[in-house]
Length: 336
Image (cartoon, rainbow, N blue to C red; front, top):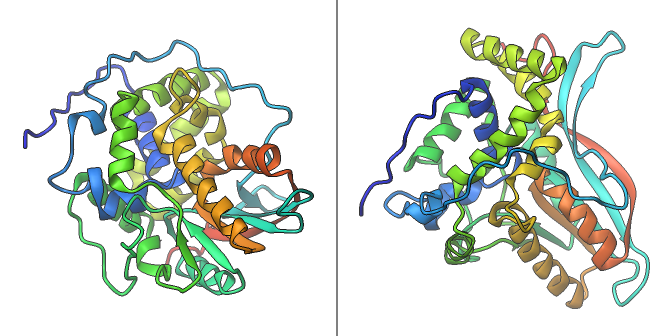
């Protein structure tokens, strides 16, 4: 198979590029699927999957679609009263369906970050036992369940990036810690063929999506706050200090909603985000039809603004409670 060709792009901030690629890999939670099977594994990288067949250009301006109300936060950095960062936290947002055939059912959106504290994944494994079904993301065949006892092997460039980020941040990796073989785990994502076909149909790929995110990122860079954040990121990367890098990336995550809208194509959809969400929610409806009434959706937090809208508009649900789980320790003694 012909290897894809990568070209340097002059004028792009290396810091911004690193931040955006990190966002794609970890916040949007495409990482687990990339590591296992399908269009992402070694030997099956295609030009269409990489977006090299696309003629799409970077939009000059990216506007957020109008919604009836702003989505709640699904990721935050907690701080002391003095402003010292304490932790990067992911939401567990509880929704209750108020009426219709599934009235009374509870659906929790359980935010995932693909590298985190070992204690974070231990808490999640414990929480998951209380649900009738946990719908999880993984671009793989439904029978392909990761074995957490097997250490991930770096078989492709993205796998290598993820391993590098885990080591740089001194954290653990999701696929090595979460028990995907639990009886209540239900695959709720595209398989590799579906993912590749949808990408090809849209003439889309990682490169073109990254380019659209660049457009959104450039629009944000004009403010002093975002310029300071980029300076912090650059300093953290150069220092190679795990704590500084954690804090800089955590601060970037808080503003990712403004950039994630840029991942959509001209019809407001994308394979990586909205179409995988659609697949997840088709599985959610199957589980509800089967009589399940306490369900969790375990996906990257970047998927949740769209899922929030789907729960409210398509299922008549309401957000009734939000709990927070510490994913990264950002305290001064976090890394020893």
